[in-house]
Every structure is written in C-alpha cells, then in structure tokens.
Length: 343
Image: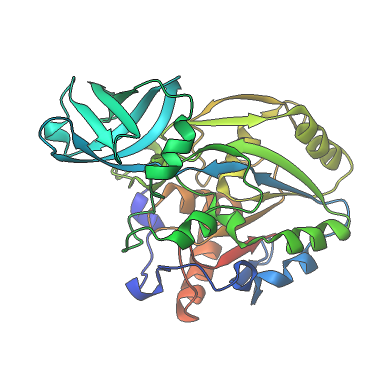
C-alpha cells in the first residue's frame, strides 16, 4: 500500500490558524460508514447523533507548555527545547535546537534562572537527554517560562489564547505536548446536554507526543514505524465500555488517540482489559476494529498516519470523498479546524 494513496489537495488558506470564536461553533461533517452519506451541521448539534446507553470515550491528557527558550550558561547562546517525555524524575527526553551545539555537558538556563538543565547524550530518535536541577516546584516553573508547542502548520507564535483553547475542558493529567484535538470542540454545557440524553462518559489516557506530527518518510505504508506513546485505561472506564459492548450499545471514541487506546486494550472475547503501557499500534486500511462503533475527529494532514486510521475505519474512498467535499465547502482543517463524526 502506497503512502501516496492517502494524499489530497488542500489549499493552504484552509489550515486554521486560530480556534473558532466558541468551541462548539465549529462546523461538523457527519459521515455514515455503511452508506457513505454525508451531512453538514455545527458541532453544537452533535447530541442529536447520540442514543441513550452510548458510551463516549474521552482522552483526559493535559497539554503542558513544553517549548522552552533558553540560553547557554556563560556564553548566552540561544537554544530552543521541546520536552517530550520524562524518563525518570528530572530526566527528560527532548528536542534541542540547534542540534550541532547541543553537546553533552552544556548547561542551559531558562527564563531568569527559574529552571536550569544540563544536556546529556543523544537519544535513539535523534533528541537529547536533559537533566534538570532538582526543584520542588518544577511544574510551576514550567508553566511560568514555557510556551504551548503549537503544531508546525500554525504559522504564528503561541499567544495567551492557546493556553486555554489548545486544551480540552476535561483535561486532567499532565503529559501531552500536543492536544487531542477532537475534544477541543466540547464545552461543559455541551457535555451536560449529552449526559442528559443518557450517554455515559468513560475517560482514558494517552499522552500525545511530537511523533503525531512527524511526516511518514517511507513509500510503503507497511514500512512505517510509529512513535511509542504512553496509555492507560482504568477499571472503571473499562467496565463502562464492556457493559456497552455486552448490551449492544455503541462505543464512540473522541479522537484517534482514544481509538488507539481502546484497540491497544482490546482483549479476547470482544472486550477491553484495563491496564497501561506503551503503544506503537499503527492502524491503516485492512485493520479490523474490535471495539469502537463511532469516531469523532478533526481533519488530518495528507499522507499522515492519522488519515490512514480514519480511512481504515470508514473506507479510503469514502473518507477522501468527504475530504474533497470539505475542501469544496471551505471547512477549516487540522488542530484548530472543524470536526467530523463517523458513525
């Protein structure tokens, strides 16, 4: 299967640079999996598509301001750091630029000295190990000096609005460098309206890494290797999901991150098993979904693993036809863009 099979034309002007004025005012394209029928509405109307007993599964990960601008102790040379993953207390895997000057032993100072770190060895993925000086208020300092690491297709510097809008209203657990963007459209009021319909909420966790934005560099889909991401599914959520599966109710994933968690947690007998770990699950056409019946998602980059997952769920031709229609109707694309419901 060729990566080029998942290409489509997107005018650059349709890439959303800012969020919609209100979260729930985004447009919503509804795609029926069985028939290919397409409908157009707004996200605030999404409760109409849910039924009593449905389980809506959400990713509670919380984005932190992982982009740090620092200077080299002594010389004052500028460095840009994006924190990726805390390997152990105070020890982080990070991207450090300029890489040619990021030599082991170089000490970096962030802000007015609130944070300091020493560059360590190169990682297998081409990043660096950073060892931060011990600090009891590490996270407080990160939020003081850090910036939201907006995706590279948003061609502006982070602003104050991104601190709230590049975050779901139900975010709880710090750890993501990118938002699970399908959830950005929900408000507390909309969630309450959905709950009043008899829909149940199950929360899971997958920390989104920068790997989600890295381009697929191979020609054959099957040759691509996914970046590992941490996930967790607790027993309470697993029980809710399994009860829905047993009773013939629908399990609807809010985002590709949730879809990957549930499929990673799938067990024999058509249920999910609580647990945690690291997933490299790569879903592309030919994959047989075992858990989810519906999916809420944003519009994804051409040739991306996220688009491949959507195509695996709803069919490549149907998805690409829906994307062409979204382009023709001038939907807004990517992280701050409009949404899609596949049921």
